[in-house]
Image (cartoon, rainbow, N blue to C red):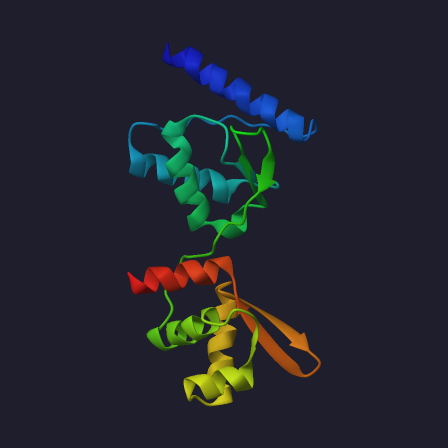
Length: 178
């Protein structure tokens, strides 16, 4: 029956979590599973209302709520402390990055992001400004905006700042192209 399958799924989750860390508390919440928009909103409410460290596991649990949970996590990435992926193939658990892909970026900033992505390695602001035929101050403003959206990672090397695209940045650029 449906109740037995739900109980088995909950037991699987608890067992897997205890293998990772026996001190973790697992709270069970019922999510509407037959209405996607309602399920996403319920998951979103749970994620944003939690007052303790939230770890989301994407590898174990009922498939009926997988996409609503994933959608809610992508909507509120800063509310999640850690995301884990359990492999059915080898039994391993690994931490996975949660991309920050919400919010839009102006086209000029996407052009800067694409130029950064085109580099196989880090690029400095002066080189990027020359490549884009833009002023250093314009490129610096773009860099600040891209950093706010976790689209790039910037590092200081002495007085020089270099940047590199992040996983989130690469996804944002793909989204802008489609």
